[in-house]
Length: 384
Ligand SMILES: C[S@@+](CC[C@H](N)C(=O)[O-])C[C@H]1O[C@@H](n2cnc3c(N)ncnc32)[C@H](O)[C@@H]1O
Image (cartoon, rainbow, N blue to C red; front, side):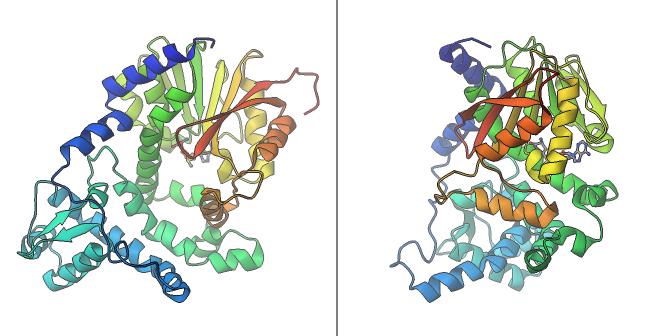
């Protein structure tokens, strides 16, 4: 735990080199992508819009989400990866209606996702490149998820949540978020794909912010398909891991297969119990899914399982104390709509930790909008 910053940087760098994580390969990709046009759209070269125009631009977000979602479903970016193509060629490959596909591409050109040359052929811009499946910056899985009925229909019912305090997802889909996913493989796969991808995008930031070398067993609670745990275990060859999530989810955890000799998968509910035997318990983007009461239940189960000298590591976006503009309201509204969770401030996390028998020791900022909150167990006799 006390390795100095340079050792940590070295580990992170080795991970970046060996695993080809996003930060390093991203720089290389940019250097290789001279053929891609920089991002330009109809608004970028003009004067700022007047307030009503800006408001209408914001309101047209529903068109933008579905246009990008449609392009992602068709795999347009992958088809354009090797160079410009005509609409007819794209339509033949994707079985889309060519005149309508042209109109979709014209919209995408107007917002800077693709570029149409003088011969009427379309190519990717740097922005559109992020919709390629194998781009180091790929967010195609987000494009697939955000426009799909799972998220889209729930957000369409946001007003219900605002008026009642209930979660719109349950109102629209008839079951709470994770219960609904339990019966729907396809939609669960789309959700888990974006969770995995976003963990991959964040792994380098976690590794450069935190030194895991003092631990012997790291337990990832609600670890999804294991992308974060696999990233950390790859950087620390002597560390063992336990991936804990719902049984169906850990069954699909391909990310930890390459390190299966050091990583056990355990299925179960964190509202019942979590695996014992770890000296570090990590929860990334888990607590924000839940109300305070349920989050405390999860943490209490971690408190039961953790070694007395262990560390609790919670990775979340923090709501700043001073009301400064920051990205957390976007996730907060999404959590409210999907299931009664919320984004929290450092003080609110400290309260949750305390109620569950942990002390919040420090907050470690990362090279991402997220922070690591490090806690340790308070003595068994202590309050909580
Ligand atoms: C927002 S995702 C975060 C996944 C992962 N930690 C990451 O950062 O990509 C929340 C995770 O909690 C898991 N989960 C939900 N309910 C659970 C429960 N009752 N017990 C264990 N895991 C659960 C989900 O399956 C999902 O993988």
